[in-house]
Length: 103
Image (cartoon, rainbow, N blue to C red):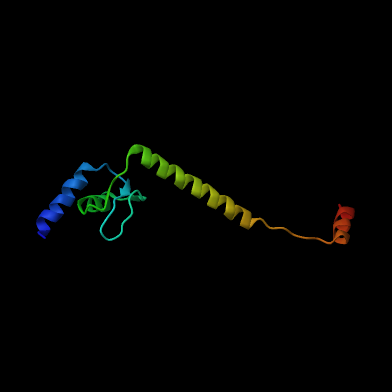
C-alpha cells in the first residue's frame, strides 16, 4: 500500500465533509462489520472510515433517527437517575404526632 496516496485520499475525503461531527452508517466488511450501525465521528475519523470502505455518511433521515434515539435514551437515563436519587424518610407515627404538636 502506498501511504502517500492513502493519506491523500483521507485528506481529500475530509475536505468534502462538513465541519463538526458527522453521523456515519457502517457497511458490511470482511471482518464481520454489520451494515447500518450508526455512530457519530469527527471529520478525520469519518474520512478514514470512508477511505477504508468501512462506513458511509448517513442520510439526513438516518441522522435524524440517530439523534432522536440518543435524545430518548438520554431522557430515559436522566429519569432513572432522578428516581434513584429520591430519598424517603420513615417516621414512626408517635414522632409525627410529636412534631405536629410542637408546631
